[in-house]
Length: 394
Ligand code: AMP
Ligand code: GLY
Image (tube, rainbow, N blue to C red; front, side, top):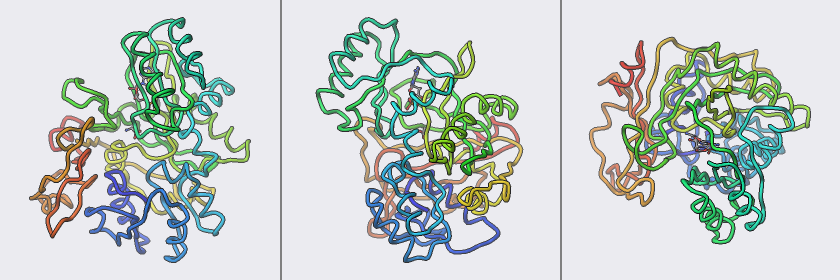
């Protein structure tokens, strides 16, 4: 299992419940995953080193948590070594790593999404944003760890954001190309599915809480919490027919089948669901909530996806609801401060002492003490018969 956040701790837990057993190696992992398997240090930017580690460990399956190593070609590197991988090739990961590619693919398939223009020239982008119907959204095309989307209040602010990205070097190469799109209104939904290259199996729809503070106040973040289910299975299936199935078919037809978790970030407008973005991996913190409802054999489902036939081990789900509440360090998201000593977590680690469990997202051991690493530090997860119970327990 590749990665080190709260999402990976949740995946590690679900994998370690697999009846087949086996050994779990987490690279690089965190102090929470150390209780579930063997952490091995590795740089997520060094896909050759990760592939070499998988080969040395004679891995039956590599599960990739974050997008960055996928965009760098980790799945391709593993395929070249004959190692099964749950996670898309670099070409299929472009659905997340290039918003320009995702938009062009949606346009060619008639998938509903915001009207947009892709710009590589600042003057053109600025002229477009001033002339276009208001309001607009400015997005870096490349990977920006959740910092690539600006929701400006005025055309001047939009031009300022474009200038910072295209002339000021904010976000580097990720913002060489930008997408300027229509700003949509509605409830958001994170729809995720296991994909085997030709089929998909939907997970319960989830919703993440984007703003820093209670009551939807404060700046946008990577996600301060999440809950599932956020819609009925019927609605999720209908939205997936519109926004996910055409993508899976098209990626297969291109010869770059999508294997792994396909994530459609939707906004439900009065004229129906529209795609805000695709991701090529589980959402964080959506995974923490959704996997709390997983009732199948995760290792078998992921291996079946990697082998191209999900029907061999389809996922199954518990009834009820799950919620995840993120605990972040001071200063998050602008100037995250770490180094706070964390105590009292042990009895909460496996849910024995409480109905809630604590997953590690950004912690480290320092001289035997657990300290926060800054940013999103812990994910507190609970399930219940009804959502309010799960939220109250978390
Ligand atoms: P993205 O990374 O594209 O999902 O954008 C991050 C967040 O910005 C989304 O979850 C939305 O809250 C918001 N957002 C992105 N695009 C739009 C849009 N076209 N209209 C309204 N809000 C948007
Ligand atoms: N929580 C949103 C994401 O993982 O992209």
